[in-house]
Image (cartoon, rainbow, N blue to C red; front, top):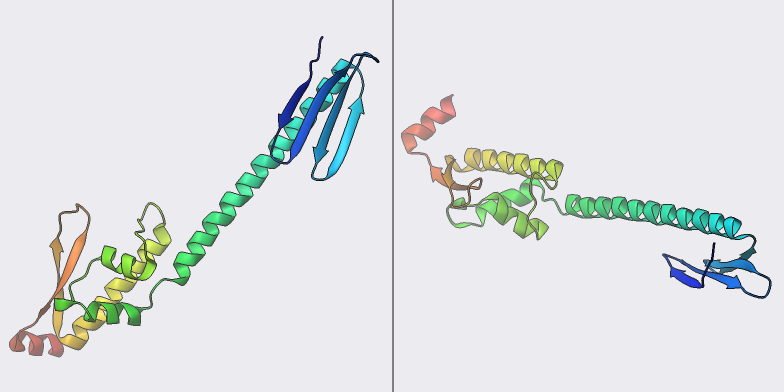
Length: 176
């Protein structure tokens, strides 16, 4: 088997596989971090060593990518969780709108600065939705009215508009 000169660049290693024409022996030179290694042997030994080192580097790259992606996802989730509004903040936001009109997209954009979906981040989406529901209940009790759902052009998006109850309904509502 003839081994020609080749150079392979990987994640953090430079391999040099060369053939020593004087000694008739292939050499494998490689560098891991700042350490340099050189191996001599038969063609089969060098090729076997080359394959093992390359496989090890690929495994390290995959592990590093896996750890990196897991860390990145957690960091993004943690950032979003930290910027989740409290119920008091939600109440303040809703009360600042005309007719207390709001939808979940407005709330997400205001507090989280991005849109989250139930598919993308189910727990945070559900928490925000549940907290919005609580905030609406508090406002309904404080302002003697009820929120009415209205469909929007977006298929699954609901807009909530506050409707005050009439005096007779308010009295009935407070008695029960």
